[in-house]
Structures are given as structure tokens and as C-alpha cells.
Image 1: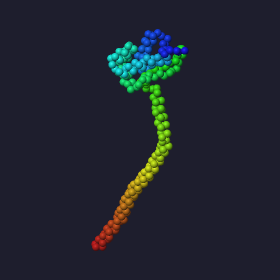
Image 2: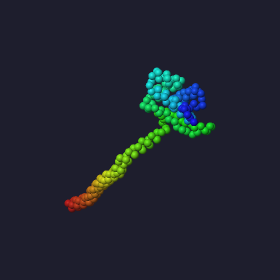
Image 3: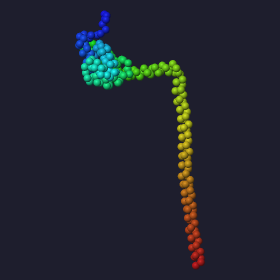
Image 4: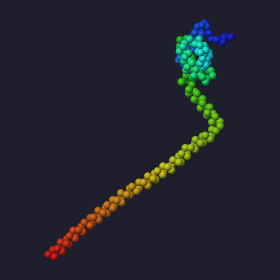
Length: 220
């Protein structure tokens, strides 16, 4: 039974446990996520979250306290410059633990611990579905049926407005085509009439010349 055992010593001495958690916290700050056993991940979460809270106030005193836990200048710089800006509006809960498959060698429970604000893969789809579900519930409870009626009526109005437009276009095209076809027919008829008139007038010329020749012969 665990009477009064609030701290998991992880089978190590106190100095060994503090050094291990300090190194794991430094790796978490530098890489934003690490994979370890589930027991170590739970112990690290209790160890690193007060350090992240202390980093919200960028003072010399806070930097010295954080450095006493981490013992790494690069990690302290990244914590106060980058991470502190992202977690400024978050009131605790800076880390997330995700359980993974057991380790092959000793079948130990493994877990992934990461900073929540630096996650780009896990939980993004879940958050979107939760938002949509809440909106759907509110819309159904308040006015679900009228929304369906409006959506069904809109396409009907569009179809009715589109039909007469197509008919008008067809009529305009037919009216425009008929005078274009009649114009060349009238011109061809005029040309044919002029040609026939010229042919009919042409044989009269030789008759007049023949009569003149006959008169001339008679006069001689």
C-alpha cells in the first residue's frame, strides 16, 4: 500500500533522481518532446511545470532559480525568450503525456511527453471536430428545420431564373441569323436581272446595223 508515498523515487537516490529529472527537463525544453517511460514522464511533469511558470517573469532572480534546476545556459535562454512568450496566456498545463506501446525488452510502459503549445500533429483534428459538434447541437436545438427549408428553396429560385435567360439567347441568335441569309439572295437576283437585260439588249445592235447597210445599198 502507498500510505504517505507522494513522490515516486524511481528506484534512485535523491541526488541521482534530481540530476536525471534536470537533464530530462533540459531535453524537453530544447527538443519540445521526448520519449521515456510512463513513470518518468509523470515525475517530469511535476518537476518541469513549476519551472515553466517561473519563466513567465523574466527577471534576474527567476533566471538564477531556473538555472539552479537545469544547469544549462542554452536551455535557460530558449526558455525565457521563446517558450515564455507562447505560454504567457496559458494558466498551467504546459505539457501533455501520450501513452505508447510497451517497450520490447522489459515490456515497460512508454509515453511521449511534449509541450502543448509546440504541437503540430496530435489533437488538431480532434479540436476541429469538437467545435463542429457544439455548433451543430446549438443549431438543431434553436432552429434546425428552417435552415433546411432555406437551403432547399435557394436552388429552385436559381433554376427558374436561369431558364428564361437561355431561351432569350436562342431567340436573339435566330433573329440575327435570318437577315444575314436573305441579304445575299437579293443581291444575286439583281445581278442575274442585269445580266439577262444585257443579253437581251445585245442582239438588237446587229439588227440596227443591218438596216443601215441595206439603206446604204439602196441609196447607191
